[in-house]
Image (cartoon, rainbow, N blue to C red; front, side):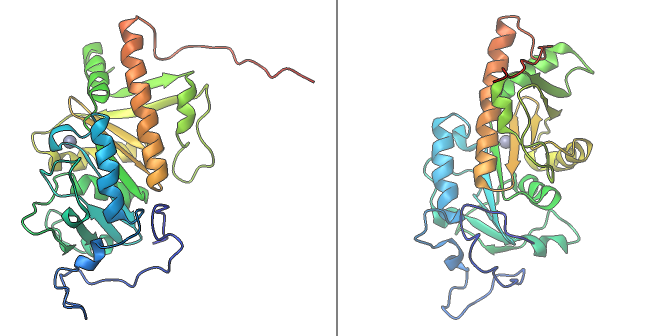
Length: 277
Ligand SMILES: [Zn+2]
């Protein structure tokens, strides 16, 4: 798999495939702790805690909810369940081999290359993995942003049949989104951004099939809203995932305020032609 993580070792040679078991290496590192030890601030094990600390200040990962995961070639870095996102450390990270997960008969049984002592794997793990395997993403962010939750509630109030998609157009920030995987360029000002909405489940892990279904139905989307819960946003690399997540949160907040002012999210606006010389 090609490297798509701009945050870390994109220019470094691809690491050799690693077995799907915890191994002992020459340094007697029985838990592969070397995978989360680096002086590089852009190493995924360092970047996830620093990103989550920023997201915590935005209200995206309050009360241990939400999180972020980064893929570096075959290695996936994920924070454990239940940690306070603003206090997370590199040593808290789980690391797994993406390729090794493909061969498992039961995908709920995951094999970790590195586990934090006393940690519990995150329920978001299979959802992050869906973004990596189905979309080739390099980073996936999950927020419990109140603006995302409010948008799903406003759609719910529209009634069945009108509550499954968030649509907005003619707003400058829409340009922050790519047109879709494999498509060149970003959406334009007049394009309509469409984000599918799936229903929430009692356990986060059970959302996986519904998220994958939405990815298939909306092949160009980089995000899926979860009703009364939050949003999953991914990108080809950390920069793109973060940019799209920020743009989306901006648009969700704007949409809530527009609804409060009785302004429509989708409008017909005539294109202004550029003035000639
Ligand atoms: Zn969640």
